[in-house]
Structure formats: C-alpha cells, structure tokens
Length: 339
Image 1: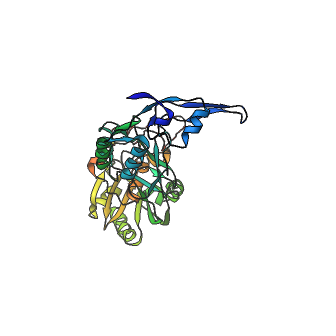
Image 2: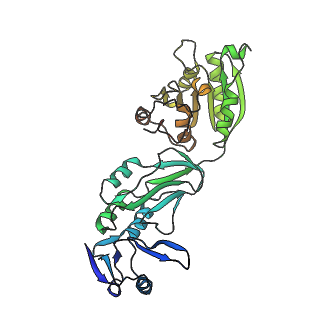
Image 3: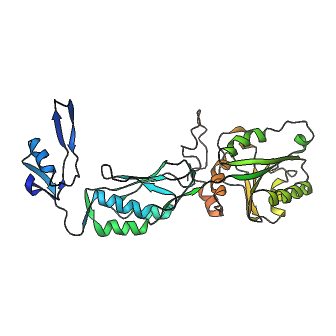
C-alpha cells in the first residue's frame, strides 16, 4: 500500500509515481525519478533540490520482490540456448535476444503456463521463426511494482529454459527436378532460379541439380544417390493428385521415416516430406513458384535445425495456415503459418 513519508525515511522503499525535473539552465524538462525506483541514500539531496520533503512510496515487505529484481530472476530462468538479456531492466522490463542466426525454439505450453501464474508476463515471437543475431525474441516483467516472491519463483520454475534459438549451419543440398515436359525441353524449369536464393538465405547451397522424367524408378535411383551425398534433398513437381505424379511415391517407396504427404497450409497443400537414412527429403509443390510464402517456408526452418515434424505439428498449422494473400506480402512478419 502507498504511504506518504519524509524523504529521509524513504531509503529502500519504492517510489509510487514519476517525479519531474525542470532545469532551465540545462534546458531540460523530464522525469528525474521513475515510478518503481528504489530510493537510495544518495537520492535524498536530489529529491530535496526538486522540492520534495515528502513522497509516496511502497514498502517492500518480507516475501515480496521489486519489479526490477523480478524481471532479472524471470529472464534468467526463461533463457535457454543461444540467448542473452539486457544487463539491467528498463521500466521494470527485460528483453531477451538471440545470440546467433538461427531458428526460435519456444516451448509454447510452458510459456502459456508461465503467463497463467498471475503477475509474471512474458510475450515471445513465434516458435520456428528465423532470427538474426541480436534480434529480440522475448520480453519479461511483472505487472505490478511489487509482487509475491513465491509467485515469481513459481513462474520462473515453470518457464525454465522455454526460450531458445537453434543455430543454422551451412548445408549442402541436391535438387531433383521432375517432369517429362521439362526433361524433354518443352518447358523451361523455373524451380531452380526460384529456390536457389531462398535456400542460400538459410545457408543452404544447391550443390547439384538434375532433371528427370516422370519415371518412378529413375527418381528413386537418383534420390537414393543424393541422400548419400548431401545433407538434404529437394524434389520439385509430381506432388499433385494426378496418377502420373510420382515424386511423393518415390520418397515413400524408399522407406522414408515419418513420411507426411500434404498439410493444412495454403498455398502449399501438397508439400510432402520424410527422412531417408536420417536425411530430410522434401517434395516441393508448384505453389512455391507463384507465391513468396508457402508451406515450404513454414516447415523448412524447423527441418534445417533438425526438428522432426510430427503429424500433430502439421495439424496444428490448420489454425493460421490460410494465407491472407495480402497485396504486399510481409512474410514472415505476419500470421501465416503461425498457428
């Protein structure tokens, strides 16, 4: 509870309101002491210079914690791999940053439980987002100036290491372009030029590409070869419902683990993926030619940092998986695929 005390008696207590300073000699008008500031012995002369003989303060009782201390405690608990934080709180808040170029790994369930505790508050960016070094990925504080220490410590325990960034490393990829019309020269391939810069931006180099007709055995043969040579393999074409589209069949018939055909994301419904001998294999649908962002852009960051895609994860993307088709695409800073 707030109470009025003499400034000499305010040391160690929490200021309830901003105190403004007007200094014509320095051409300054602004906040000299912010709400939430803990009064120190050396603050007393300055407060008196500002005409404050009495001020309103909070007492921090046993079992309570100030917002600045709470922010530090909570941030230290939330931070997982490849993260760092502000050295000191600003207005009771601490931001958490990425140390590396990588992909966020946010434990969403624990973040929700953390925020259900009460006073503690931590918004984050989405899980599975590509971030650069020094990007802000979370911010933490308590709602009030003072909170129960037990409550803050409970939240800290719940949210332990919930905010992480998995680093992206250079990878070598093989690209198999399928389609008899492209193999025969009737149609010019456009996938390579479209995919190359997208992959390069995520440290993936296409080391080799080959164009094959819609022949299941030929595709399986070359896919087996590429799986041995490269870190991952992408295939284009042959992912629709037409009987002669065989790309996804090649992946499945080679015994892909965790094989997933299709997903509830538009554009890019027909993307298929699996792991052969531990290597990711992705069949990219034609939607990737026409749209800046498709299901490939949602799943690729997860795959590059070694996260297996489960059917539950795929189903969860139904919420938010429909692109708004905005006149100017702002992906990835948009709701698409962030369900």
